[in-house]
Length: 160
Image 1 (tube, rainbow, N blue to C red):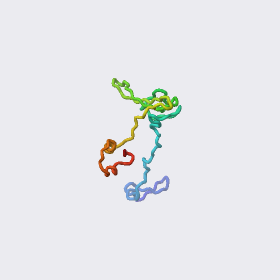
Image 2 (image 1 turned 90 degrees about the horizontal axis):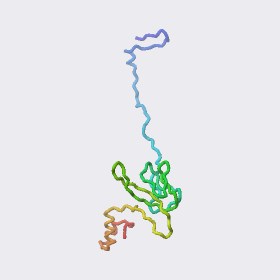
Image 3 (image 1 turned 120 degrees about the vertical axis):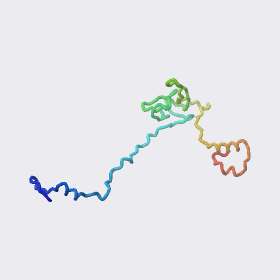
Image 4 (image 1 turned 180 degrees about the horizontal axis):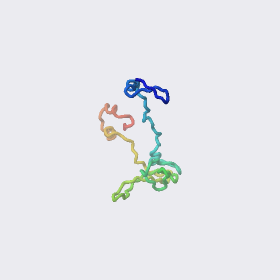
């Protein structure tokens, strides 16, 4: 049952017969993935630790927001980066600040002048030592002799 359209001269099929000639896809359509994008890291964090010497305008801390507050001889950039205002040694202090009726502990970074020969402020940063290894090391420091097999269990950098 073919019929011709009078206007265009193109043959067209009526609806019931058009359904017989439906073509199905033999392969799945390859859509584009929405994943696979990643941005470069912003290199945030602490650049100079407590007890380290810094020069004027050197970056001490790169951060987003006020995680660490500027103290003496430290100024803050518009992106919250903390810079040294003078040559000296980095020192960390903690203080309590009222916030919504409670006291909140805040960290502050200070720069103290460097004096050659004078004892400098020490860092609070200690390397992590697992508790069981610390106990084993303490036994050797105290002078207990636990036998030669204990030396094999303790890494060289923790031996007394």
